[in-house]
Length: 402
Image 1 (cartoon, one colour):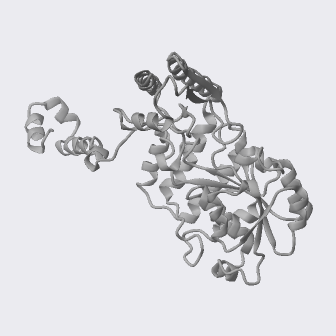
Image 2 (tube, helix red, strand yellow):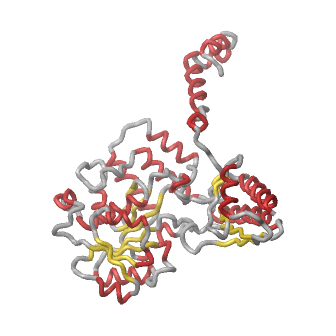
Image 3 (spheres, helix red, strand yellow):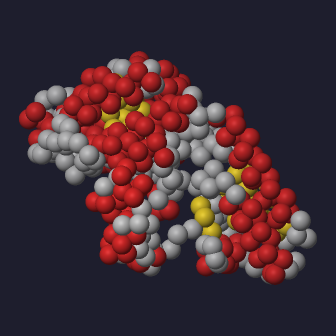
């Protein structure tokens, strides 16, 4: 490593450079380079890996684009009022996504809590302070039974009771004076009995706000405005998945009255249910930069690249005797080319979990997903070129087991 003493000595024999830059500038810049090159993960013993799994929070979502990093660095150099940041960035996001209003949140789960809280209280300061005590407020949210997931805890944070229904008849019969909101999980649109359009229709019929959780539902890009155009009063997307923004961000989009009310529960206000869901100015600006970058992408070229990458891995795996592969695209969430690898266990003496573990413990480490019957892979979160490493390693492991 270049030391300060060595650098000063070298500068003495560089008159041309010395005439352009001061010694202090060069020393400072060199020190900055050394800091930047510090391998924190190696120092800490943190394992890094090739992400062949997807945008899972446990795997830290996605990698931010250079423009996002630059926006974060830019925001870190100046002070700005938090509410003004949210006002201006929210206006910009709303104009890009053709909705009435928007705000940046600390993830999609935060957006669900803040949006629910805003619907419950409106701008009533006494009610805002009162949550999660719902005395004198509506206290029920209706949800399809097949849309129940662990993340609906974000709704229950506000103190409401979730009322499960299965059919349209069930839903309409469940509506009463306590009903505050109808909540929809977009990933399960084709699983629940009531589809998105019909769900909105019922909400409008009874004058009850509807909320659509679309956390993992880009691509396609059109989803970013599809559901507010459809009539959902609130919609949320994760910022750290397909949009490649900061992992700890999300967006809450929708009707201005509900966005304004949701904001009343968030920082910088203190005596609120959302105070702990703070988003800093760097994340707010990073989320905007990520959205602008995503909207400007050549989405068709991205798709062709993912198809080629997944086919490469599929062809490599299926060249092993006894292996079958299936390339598919999930209907809604994580709607990207994906690979499912299965095999004849009489010919290949290894389980899917053992394959995943070998990939994980190899060098480089590779993260995949799947269940008891298959190893599942996506390539859209990989750095280009890593698909070749994955293809080679998967084939090696399967051949060894055969």
